[in-house]
Length: 160
Ligand code: THU
Image (cartoon, rainbow, N blue to C red; front, side):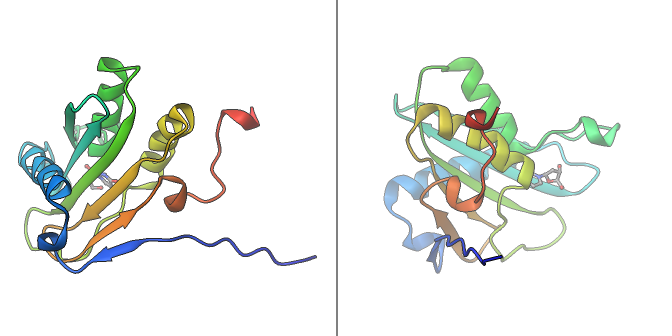
């Protein structure tokens, strides 16, 4: 038996004020999207904004349901709409803002595992990395250069 180490890499911005202007704009789109989240059951609202290589921005937010498992996360709402509307566009960047509706969320909230898998499908298919920025409702912003850095040992079509 031998041990294998897998490295990953993230960048930390101390505040959203440190973000480059274009990312700050995308983060604001995610914040605006978050305001329309339908999250009456968890009171945890999430907004996502996706920048495409055709300059379009697609937004999404979490959509909960009285039948809880029927709800969908913000990231998948946004990425599936992107796939539906612009199947040939490349996804360049995703900005995500997430947090409780009852209190401040000052730590960065990463996309859940299911959303990482969904984003992976697009990154693998387009064969170029997707930058992912995520934050709480305040505080630090984390950046990943690619989905792969958030999901080591990715499962994709090459394994089918
Ligand atoms: N949620 C997202 O929208 N994205 C994530 O990556 C994590 C969780 C939503 C799902 C649910 O509506 C609420 O946050 C609490 O889990």
